[in-house]
Length: 109
View 1: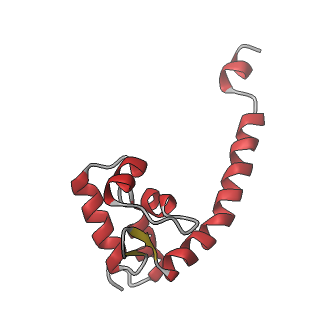
View 2: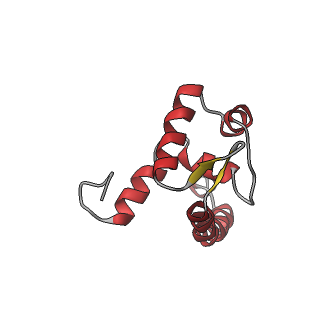
C-alpha cells in the first residue's frame, strides 16, 4: 500500500490525513464546497507550498478533485461521512473533560 510501510490501508490513510493541513483541507471542502486555491489557503491557514503539496497528495489519493476549483471526490465525500462519528465522539469527549474536576481544583481541596 502506497504510503505505508506495513501494507495496511488504515495506516496509509492515517499517514496521509495526519500530514500538516490534510484534514483541514478535507474539512474545508465538506458539504459540496468548491473553493479556489486562495480561498482554500485562507480557510486552511496554510502557506502556498504546503497547500500545493497536500492538494497533490489528496488528488493522487482520489480524495480531492480540481474542476473549476477544488472539491471532494466521491471518495472524499465518503471520508467526510466516515469522520462524522468521530466528530460526535470528540464532542462527547470534550464535554466529559469539561465536567471533570480540574487538577488545580482538586489540589487545593
